[in-house]
Image: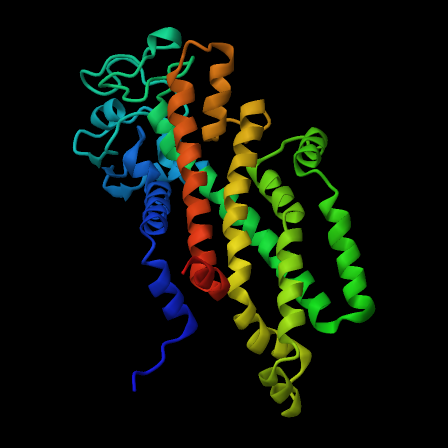
Length: 354
């Protein structure tokens, strides 16, 4: 007799049989790698350098300006490293990013030995120096897209992390306790469902003096939990009468332990599906906001803000093609992952396809 595998092992085995879902998962893993290594892929700041006898990693300044070593500000590098390193410390060395282009400014002539100045406006067509072209200000589009991957993934994961947490808590409490508590959580869910996310984001961003991408993620998360809550409530209503829950009550387990240790692990599989679809929806929302000019403020780079740059000059087709393709492929990948999860974890769908 073969030993039985756990639910998640079986689900993963079924998921792997779907080629499109596996390709989508690999694509998202690729995006995560690009986001994590963005400063080492595209930038004008060294990944590592030795300066005046010490090792520094100036590229971390792309994640947060405060992470860039203060000595380079003190020595007036002004963001230009190749020439300054050679002039101010002849014994210095540096490991440079794979692609010498900055996501926030145009590269100047001979900033890198032999490299011309970035072209701007209509002259910034794709070339060997700038494979995806440049925007109106001469900023390289490929560098902006590489660093914009971080924003796209953060928006999806952080906003749906907030939404998933709220939705699971609200749905679990209503489904487990029932009665007036269930009625209260259900009415709360219905009220939030009536709030248009995009309009609320625009209203709050108009009130906040200095809006950031974190404000956008918080609003998307705090308004996107309703579908997760309703699904969680249904699963808890179905499972709270199960024999293993009755046995847990009989041995003296409290409501918190029963909900967390016994019901939630068995209800989690279908809940992951709307969370996956929600990540795709959050990325689309952020891209739409950035396209309208309400996205993360400079110097943050996002795919939607690159699209926004094409509004003033529709002849710059590369500002539409490359970020638009990235948004399309990312949203498609998350939807394919969600569909794959749904079929791998829902036996009814598997039976219907036979």
